[in-house]
Amino acid sequence: MTLSVTIRHRFAGFALDVAFDAPGGVTALIGRSGAGKTTVAHVIAGLMRPDMATITAAGATLADTQAGLWLSPQARRIGYVFQDARLFPHLSVRQNLVYGARRRARLPQAEAELGAVAEMLGIAALLSRRPGALSGGEAQRVAIGRALLSGARMLVLDEPLAALDPARRAEILPHLERLRDEARVPILYVSHAMEEVARLATTVVALDRGRVVAQGAAAAVLSDPVAVPALDPGAAGALIEAVVMGQDADGLTRLAAAGARSSCRASTPPPARACGCGSRRRMSWCRATARSACRR
Image (spheres, rainbow, N blue to C red):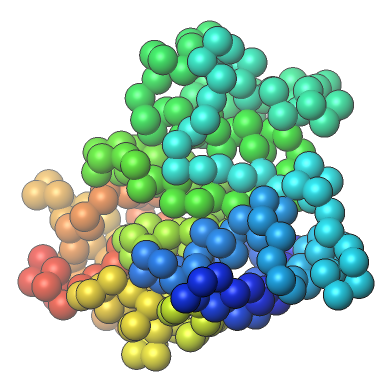
């Protein structure tokens, strides 16, 4: 599904003027705090009406302010996941998962899909719990599952890992990779964490002061000097596609990439299901300061 976005809006002291096209897969919207990332996400989801917007998804027009068209958030069928999970504390995990489906009169479909979604997100054993008994990472996975089961045509994940500690982020990232690979639902991923973007994104749109400064394939944008102003200081680096050749007893993973072989210790271990020899891996964001951890 292709997402086409044009947005213009003027705040006091800040002007947003963005236009980009996003193919299927995970499109990461990156930039420093205040660049306009969340505002763009809110407009796409219908949570904010700007001065001007034209938004189409899979050929369906969600907004065309010049023509007087503005679909309500519920009519857009976009699953929005915030930084905090926003689960209903009085409902079980199962009841939270199917809540959106019930509101959209697709409960039978959601019940049929619930088992597969719960297994994909690693929450099948949590269905009878209440949100108060969940970790932060578990709660975010439930929120993502709820958005999926609502029948969303696409997902908007607005810095979903920002409120989690490193251990919880490491816990949830493999599930997001599996969501990207198996769910076949386009995802707009808002983040300023390059490690997350490098691991998940297929397309990157870089914002700086309300403008798009770079857009395209993740490997190209994340190594583009033009995009550096949109990154946090020191975040410039390279993205390496590699094939896992094996793992050593000391924790190093042996890789083959572009005819060269090396061994690296990733900052976040790959999920067990992706560790087999011959599996293709996108290695985590490599900064110059981390290159000493790799041996050729």
